[in-house]
Length: 418
Image: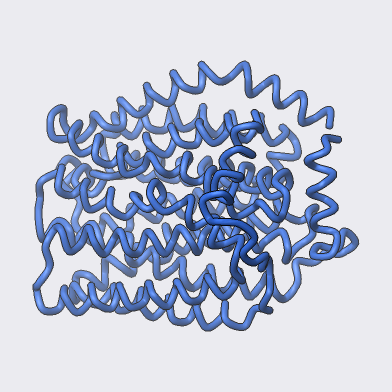
């Protein structure tokens, strides 16, 4: 076993008891907060593109609104990681969720007054995304201190399963239906979900992961960068996740236009279409731990990336809504599988005192290309048609996976030997 892993186990001796086999009350409070918030996110994710289409039908402007929500992963991730390692993580989560509630309430009021514009929606997306960067980092950094290391895959599976089901299956149909009734209504519901989630998070014990100020923030961010740079496996996973996320947003940034214009779906049908991804995510959550144990974590990750190549190719060629829904379901399955695997590996390998900062670098690489992918997707859709972003994304994914495959398989053997 490597020295890093030994240090990591020592760091968590006091916070995660190996003999414990149940996830515990603190975890389930996190889970319920995630569940409530995820349904609200699903309502928002269905309503926001529909609201954007009422403001503009230009693919590039729609992609700008989509990109704004993911831009914080590129710009805010590094300072967010240092903040998470300095402050109480549970407190950060509920405070930033309260901030998100305020932002969404403003969107609801603006929608009710018909005072929206592309810049306003882009700003709202950026503010919500910035808060989400801190919340996500804090949640992933808290989890290893809430559950034992041996239960991390199960805990992550439960978290991502409810997250994707809420955001993809339960929330979107509600969001599209509420949007038909009144444009402001789904955003009011989302704001309520943030408030309930914040209340649940505020009940968690304090000082969970609080390390405090030790050095200038710039120095601490650099420490996280160096650590990931020197870890070959996690560095490779981060780069591949970045390419995968870029391709994901390249296609999905204009999915609402592809569904409503190319396949001629109604606003209500668009919300129902997104249910397929949630169903796939549910199955992925139920089976991801079993698949990772049978195949090994790295092999499961490679399988997910290879499957995504075929899925995006099929989406680009989809002749009707049924085939698109089926591919979105498969997409949800493999995204949940790859997310559970990579998140659990990070939590097991990265030392506890560095978890927030290294996670932030990983997510910056993994998610920072999303806004660029969304913008590229808008341009590609404008110039080559609404099917083209999915087809090009499939080709890019295939080339990058082929380039990294040998290195990944070598690392898989190393991990198994350890």
